[in-house]
Length: 511
Image 1 (cartoon, rainbow, N blue to C red):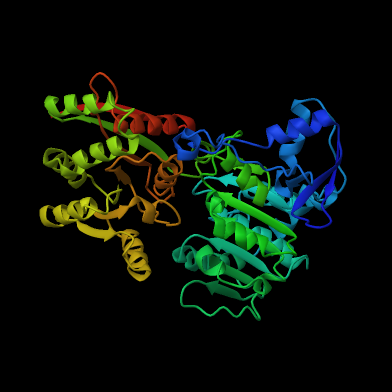
Image 2 (cartoon, rainbow, N blue to C red):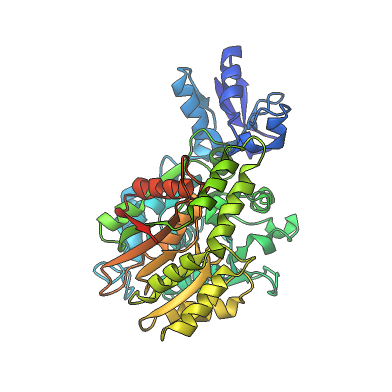
């Protein structure tokens, strides 16, 4: 099989010579299942097979980011695969030793990041940046506390210093990440390179003239016309697991002259046969780095994490029996309705509320309390109780909290002890940096592997005299003859703890 970059659209590879057997296999292998396809009404009605195709049969096209996946399939089924323009995808002449020497020289005068400095550039950060530069299209899973922003800067500094690029676009999910990223870039640079950074978010000017670096939210960037992106050389997608978002894909598609595009995330979990896995690579490229939380902890680059799973059994037997009867009627009642019933029982139960809030109130040092419910005010009730019944300083954040206040509360949490930040999962699971966190309470069930891993990452940042971060995972056990949905969610979180190498212990509580 022979492949080349499509002349009509360089975002695709075109198969121009292959046997019928090879083409049939490619068509099948590049049609993965969508996550949770079994619950889709179209699948249930038998009008959709649950798959989406990444192969255009008529023109024999595959997204260029899936070039490595094509090679994997070819190897698996024992047929040759020759990519004619591979040098335009992989810089095979890029030499690691020369790149490492360049980095050490760049940071040699830096008071923090020089050799022997307090924040000396780490070997894995150099290797990660090298891989991103060598593979012009790439995805990297890099855990929280690994220094993602430093890796981004190293990539920029090298390309900008060597005159390989002029304009560098970084897409982030939140405004707070823009401000944080800009400050970090200035710190890393230490006045060495001359560049200007344009923040692009709601309320900022959008004129790009005179700016070498752009930090922007996908919400604001997607509103710009195609011409606005005409001379962008590099796109970096931070928290790239959000690349499933159509807006981010549209932004990438608007950049015709990209020399490099890559994504970084602490939770771009790899499911080799899923449509999400293919989508991420299709737009950004294959996985080239995998820096795990366990690697960081084992090498003392991040704080040790210990998880306490508090499995609570408090519901009256008659209510459990009613829930069990509903589970027997799963063919009549949708699973989401049963799950919502369990969630409502959690937020309405006073015994449970008092047990959890009392537990939180007894914690020492600074704590982050993460909740899910906004509609019924569960997080707000926890916040009010802690303010009224403890002498601790307590802050509250949900989606309606302004960016200014969020940043103020994050800053306040960095100083002192016995402070508590009560926040919704979605506002504090990613993009925030608080070193002075010692306890993390998960007060409501959350199933998403990505959100849980991001949430735990909040506590992994190192600080002097911080030996470990304790995660308290409250689990509601409504099981009788069969497990309840919330108990099943807890089992999935425990599986995440196992996969990430986080030590944990289960505590059975009855009240």
